[in-house]
Image 1: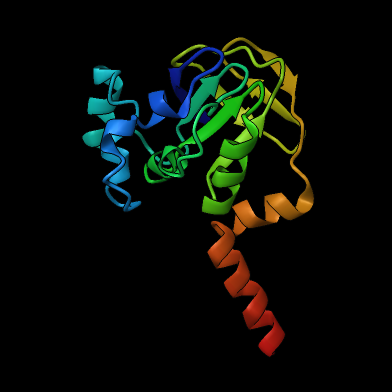
Image 2: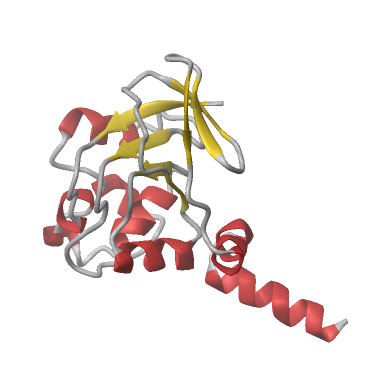
Length: 164
Protein backbone atom coordinates (compact mmCIF):
# COMPACT_ATOMS: atom_id res chain seq x y z
CA UNK A 1 0.00 0.00 0.00
CA UNK A 2 1.19 3.49 -0.80
CA UNK A 3 0.02 7.02 -0.25
CA UNK A 4 -1.08 9.59 -2.83
CA UNK A 5 1.43 12.42 -2.46
CA UNK A 6 0.29 14.62 -5.35
CA UNK A 7 -2.84 14.95 -7.46
CA UNK A 8 -3.13 16.73 -10.79
CA UNK A 9 -5.90 17.09 -13.34
CA UNK A 10 -6.24 16.51 -17.07
CA UNK A 11 -3.75 17.49 -19.78
CA UNK A 12 -0.68 17.81 -17.58
CA UNK A 13 2.02 18.54 -20.14
CA UNK A 14 5.65 17.56 -20.10
CA UNK A 15 6.39 21.26 -19.61
CA UNK A 16 4.54 21.15 -16.29
CA UNK A 17 6.24 17.91 -15.25
CA UNK A 18 9.71 19.02 -16.39
CA UNK A 19 9.86 22.61 -17.70
CA UNK A 20 11.76 23.26 -20.91
CA UNK A 21 13.97 25.85 -19.25
CA UNK A 22 15.83 22.95 -17.58
CA UNK A 23 16.43 20.94 -20.74
CA UNK A 24 20.21 21.41 -20.39
CA UNK A 25 20.01 18.97 -17.46
CA UNK A 26 19.55 15.49 -18.87
CA UNK A 27 21.17 13.12 -16.39
CA UNK A 28 18.55 10.94 -14.69
CA UNK A 29 20.33 11.52 -11.38
CA UNK A 30 19.83 15.28 -11.74
CA UNK A 31 16.40 15.62 -13.39
CA UNK A 32 14.30 14.91 -10.25
CA UNK A 33 15.27 18.26 -8.73
CA UNK A 34 13.19 19.96 -11.46
CA UNK A 35 10.11 17.71 -11.27
CA UNK A 36 7.02 19.91 -10.97
CA UNK A 37 9.32 22.84 -10.11
CA UNK A 38 6.47 25.31 -10.63
CA UNK A 39 4.67 23.62 -7.72
CA UNK A 40 7.21 24.74 -5.11
CA UNK A 41 5.80 22.90 -2.10
CA UNK A 42 5.74 19.54 -3.89
CA UNK A 43 9.09 20.16 -5.57
CA UNK A 44 10.73 21.05 -2.23
CA UNK A 45 9.57 17.73 -0.79
CA UNK A 46 11.03 15.89 -3.78
CA UNK A 47 14.36 17.67 -3.32
CA UNK A 48 14.37 16.80 0.39
CA UNK A 49 13.56 13.17 -0.48
CA UNK A 50 10.55 13.21 1.83
CA UNK A 51 8.58 10.63 -0.16
CA UNK A 52 9.13 6.91 0.30
CA UNK A 53 9.62 4.76 -2.81
CA UNK A 54 6.41 3.89 -4.64
CA UNK A 55 4.62 7.06 -3.51
CA UNK A 56 1.76 7.81 -5.88
CA UNK A 57 0.95 10.67 -8.19
CA UNK A 58 -2.68 10.58 -9.37
CA UNK A 59 -3.59 12.27 -12.64
CA UNK A 60 -6.53 12.75 -14.96
CA UNK A 61 -6.60 12.22 -18.70
CA UNK A 62 -3.73 12.76 -21.13
CA UNK A 63 -0.92 12.84 -18.57
CA UNK A 64 2.38 13.76 -20.22
CA UNK A 65 0.96 15.51 -23.29
CA UNK A 66 3.07 18.00 -25.19
CA UNK A 67 6.68 17.60 -26.24
CA UNK A 68 8.49 14.29 -26.33
CA UNK A 69 11.09 15.16 -23.69
CA UNK A 70 12.34 12.06 -21.96
CA UNK A 71 13.22 14.06 -18.84
CA UNK A 72 9.52 14.28 -17.94
CA UNK A 73 9.58 10.54 -17.27
CA UNK A 74 13.10 10.36 -15.82
CA UNK A 75 12.42 13.08 -13.24
CA UNK A 76 9.57 10.92 -11.86
CA UNK A 77 11.50 7.66 -12.06
CA UNK A 78 14.35 9.03 -9.94
CA UNK A 79 12.21 9.38 -6.77
CA UNK A 80 10.56 6.04 -7.67
CA UNK A 81 7.06 7.45 -8.05
CA UNK A 82 4.14 5.43 -9.37
CA UNK A 83 1.85 7.41 -11.65
CA UNK A 84 -1.81 6.41 -11.79
CA UNK A 85 -3.71 8.25 -14.51
CA UNK A 86 -6.97 7.95 -16.37
CA UNK A 87 -4.74 7.70 -19.45
CA UNK A 88 -1.32 8.80 -20.71
CA UNK A 89 -0.23 10.58 -23.85
CA UNK A 90 1.28 8.17 -26.36
CA UNK A 91 4.82 9.55 -26.43
CA UNK A 92 5.07 9.99 -22.65
CA UNK A 93 3.81 6.44 -22.18
CA UNK A 94 6.53 5.02 -24.43
CA UNK A 95 9.26 7.16 -22.85
CA UNK A 96 8.12 6.07 -19.40
CA UNK A 97 8.11 2.40 -20.40
CA UNK A 98 11.62 2.72 -21.87
CA UNK A 99 12.84 4.22 -18.59
CA UNK A 100 10.98 1.76 -16.35
CA UNK A 101 8.65 4.29 -14.69
CA UNK A 102 5.81 2.46 -13.00
CA UNK A 103 2.45 3.54 -14.43
CA UNK A 104 -1.12 2.38 -14.01
CA UNK A 105 -3.93 3.21 -16.41
CA UNK A 106 -7.09 3.54 -14.35
CA UNK A 107 -9.86 5.38 -16.26
CA UNK A 108 -12.18 5.79 -13.27
CA UNK A 109 -9.64 6.53 -10.52
CA UNK A 110 -10.90 8.59 -7.61
CA UNK A 111 -8.32 9.54 -5.02
CA UNK A 112 -7.13 12.55 -3.07
CA UNK A 113 -3.78 13.50 -1.64
CA UNK A 114 -3.20 11.48 1.50
CA UNK A 115 -5.35 8.52 0.41
CA UNK A 116 -3.87 5.05 0.84
CA UNK A 117 -4.03 2.99 -2.36
CA UNK A 118 -3.40 -0.66 -3.08
CA UNK A 119 -2.59 -1.69 -6.64
CA UNK A 120 -3.42 -5.25 -7.67
CA UNK A 121 -3.13 -6.89 -11.08
CA UNK A 122 -6.59 -5.74 -12.12
CA UNK A 123 -7.65 -2.86 -9.88
CA UNK A 124 -6.70 0.05 -7.69
CA UNK A 125 -8.26 -0.12 -4.25
CA UNK A 126 -8.64 3.15 -2.40
CA UNK A 127 -8.32 1.95 1.19
CA UNK A 128 -9.31 5.39 2.45
CA UNK A 129 -12.66 5.56 0.62
CA UNK A 130 -13.29 1.82 0.36
CA UNK A 131 -13.84 2.05 -3.41
CA UNK A 132 -12.07 0.05 -6.10
CA UNK A 133 -11.39 0.93 -9.72
CA UNK A 134 -10.52 -1.37 -12.62
CA UNK A 135 -7.24 -0.86 -14.43
CA UNK A 136 -6.29 -1.34 -18.07
CA UNK A 137 -3.26 -3.57 -18.05
CA UNK A 138 -0.37 -2.73 -20.32
CA UNK A 139 0.51 -5.36 -22.90
CA UNK A 140 2.73 -8.05 -21.38
CA UNK A 141 5.77 -7.04 -23.45
CA UNK A 142 5.55 -3.42 -22.29
CA UNK A 143 5.00 -4.44 -18.67
CA UNK A 144 8.03 -6.74 -18.87
CA UNK A 145 10.18 -3.74 -19.86
CA UNK A 146 8.90 -1.73 -16.88
CA UNK A 147 9.39 -4.68 -14.52
CA UNK A 148 12.99 -5.04 -15.72
CA UNK A 149 13.65 -1.38 -14.88
CA UNK A 150 13.53 -0.05 -18.44
CA UNK A 151 14.49 -0.94 -21.98
CA UNK A 152 18.26 -1.16 -21.38
CA UNK A 153 18.00 -3.53 -18.39
CA UNK A 154 15.37 -5.54 -20.31
CA UNK A 155 17.64 -5.89 -23.34
CA UNK A 156 20.54 -6.83 -21.05
CA UNK A 157 18.39 -9.60 -19.51
CA UNK A 158 17.51 -10.93 -22.96
CA UNK A 159 21.14 -10.93 -24.04
CA UNK A 160 22.24 -12.75 -20.88
CA UNK A 161 19.51 -15.38 -21.36
CA UNK A 162 20.67 -15.88 -24.95
CA UNK A 163 24.24 -16.55 -23.82
CA UNK A 164 23.24 -19.37 -21.50
